[in-house]
Image (cartoon, rainbow, N blue to C red; front, top):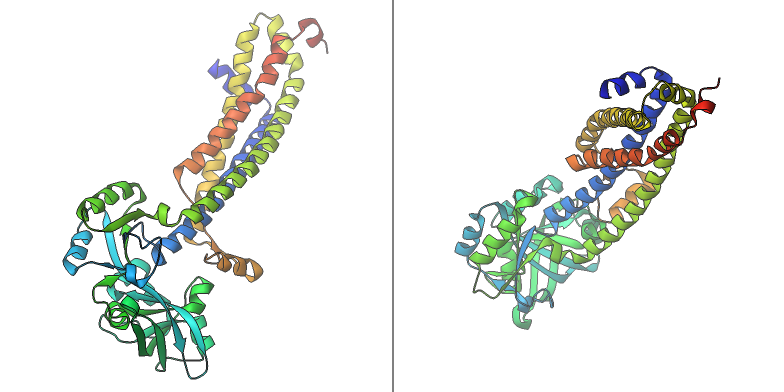
Length: 404
């Protein structure tokens, strides 16, 4: 039957070409749609995990409910180094995050302060590559990096001095003068217009709390190793008054939004599959009606209807498999190309992307399941459409079918 089915699909190359083209376009469009959707989400999460959160975070118990300096954690350098040696952990970036009023000669504004270890932050987010003017911070630097938008608002440049005034540990006044070492371009517009960076020693001196941290942001090597790394961190800090969190907990609101978006995407894909299914069904109906006389002749010559049905199903399977394989072969270089050279957004689309905290680019995802799942779905749809020719063959009236 397999040999007969393979020969049959090439007896009418035009009909085969139409069916294969229908499957090819359906699979290709599905793969590109899912690839772009997953690529955008992955890019957003990569930006967040590199700049704002960690795969795993450590905070003092109660800090997440009330983010104040009085709820900062303390951790000695030895413990931090021990965390860096745990398996699957690539980076431990201590943070001091607080708020203050910043003043220049021209104006005043409320800003977020991020105290960082310059070396560890460079490994985490490559912050130095975003410095557009001036220079990156040294380990013992007493200066600051201003967001580009913030520097424009304050009308300050590299070398100018700004004043910071806020609240320190246990209600003390936090006041200081800081020279501007560099201007940094931050992807997220709100951060670019309202954040500054300083070294951990400078931040500790400013808030009057040595060895105090708002949290530890921990990066891992591979996503699938998150649970192993999480268990290792929990074991290392067991008994200390710390909360250990996965990024899924710290970014719960974003995940909720992502689930809603995925539900919407599934609805769109379902509509697409319905359209694709009717398109494939149309070609199957055309093929079945064109071959009505052929079916009648072979049944009259003695071929059992069940065997004929199996042959037709194999023909559909071969044509669908051929279309799906061609679509995958074409989509792989396309998706891999745009994963390395993402589509650049401009104009209003770029502004919308920046408003959501995303780089104005759309990369594609290249996970294996994207190619396999779409091909399997189309194969399943084709199997459903095979019900039509099978029912026609089983109810075929030979005396009418063999008439010219």
